[in-house]
Amino acid sequence: MTRTLLLATALLAACGDDGDTPQPDLLALPGGMFYPESLGADADGTLYVGSLATGQVVAFDDGATEARVVVANSSGVAGVLVHDDKLWLCSVDTTFQSPTQIKSFGLDGAPHATFTLAANQFCNDLAFDDAGTLYAADSFAGTIVRMPAGGGALETLVSDPQLAPAAAGAFAADGIVAQGGTLYVNRFDTGALFRIDIASKAITPITVTPALTSPDGMRVLDANTLLVVEGAGRLTTVAITGTEGTATPVATGLDQPTSVIVARGSAWVSEGQLGRLFAMPPQTPNLPFAVRRVDL
Picture 1 (cartoon, rainbow, N blue to C red):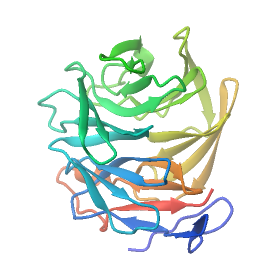
Picture 2: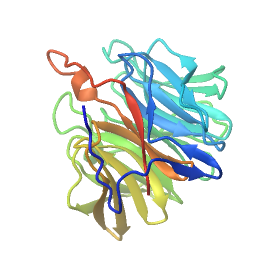
Picture 3: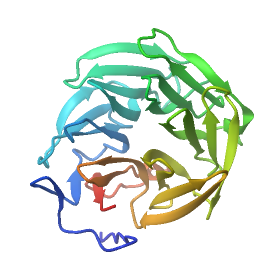
C-alpha cells in the first residue's frame, strides 16, 4: 500500500543526519499485533516504542533498524516517556478489568516502581517539568495527577469538567506536555487544547485555528510551539500567542498516528492504527507497523 507524506517544505528525504549517522525514513515494528500507542527517546537518540496490544516496549538504537525488546509487559502500554535514566509508561488494561498503573523502569528494562490510579481513571500520557515533577493526563475522570520528584504517591493537580469526556466511553484529556510553569493538555474527543498554570491551577482554553481533529500525542517544539499528531493522519505544529493557536500541517497521509518525539534532528511518529484494533469487527492492519521519520 502506498502512503504519501506531504511535507510543508518538501517530501521526506531519503535519509537525515544526526552527526554522521544516516537516518531511515521508516522503522518497522515487530509482529502483526504491535499497535504502537506512544514513543519516547533518551539523550543518546534511542527510540522507545510502546505497544497497546502486546504490552511490549521495544527500542531502536541510533543507527539500528532492528528493534530490541526492553520491557515485556503483561498489560497494554499507553504513554511512554524517558526522563533522566528511567523509562516511564502508562500500563493499561484495554478490557478495563484492572486499574491503570504508572510504571518506571531502568533503560535496560529493570522494573523500578509502580503507582496505581483510581479505578475510574485512565493514564494516557506523561510529562515531566523542569523540577522533575511527573504529570499524567487522565482520559476518563477529567483529572491531571502529579508526583513531585522523589515522591512516593500520586496526587491530584486539577479535576475539572473541561477535561472530562463529553460522552460515556469517550477519551478526553490525552496528550500532555510541560513548558516552564505551564502544562498544555489536549482532548482527543473534542479536539480542544488547554493551558494549565501549575502554580494557580487555572485552566485556560486555547482556540486553535483550524481546529485540531482527534489530537493525541504532543511534544514541545519550542517556547511557543507545540508538535501534535492528529488521528486524521496529520503531524501539526501549533504556534501559540496568548489564548490563540495557529495549526500548520507538517505531514499528512500518516496511518492513524498516535504519538511523536523529536530526536536525532527529526520528528518520529508512531502509526498506531488503533481504529483498526478497536473496530467491530476488527480490521486488518497495514503491515509492518511503523515509526515514520518526518523532517522538521
